[in-house]
Amino acid sequence: METRDFTTGKLRKAVFDRATRQLDLHFTGGSVLGYKPVPDEVFRRLCQAPNPATYWEDRIAEEYPKVRPMAQPGQGGAKPKDLSDLSDLFGGDEETAD
Image (cartoon, rainbow, N blue to C red; front, side):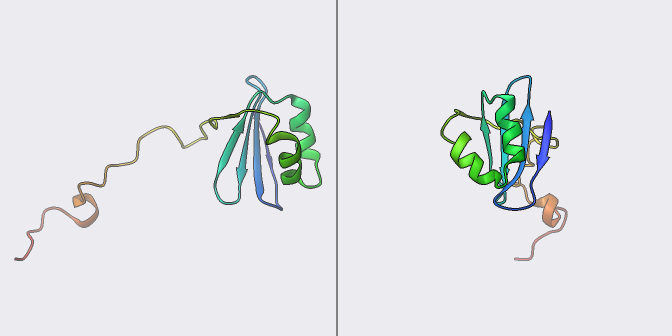
């Protein structure tokens, strides 16, 4: 997979998997959009664009179908802990006062 970080604009990072031709775009607000099948040339032009967010809007957003983003490192492993039992957070061995 190839990754390209952007330092300006609302687009922060592009991750491209050549094998599956999937492009994931990470935005400043934390959202991630996946597109497939994206040609290598489109990813290359995105990375070279003076304004990658504008390139995305003009050349990718409506041209390629949206798909589920790829799992990122640190995602998809363990499920978040169920907080219905708050004893781990607040301690569970103490008695409450009535």
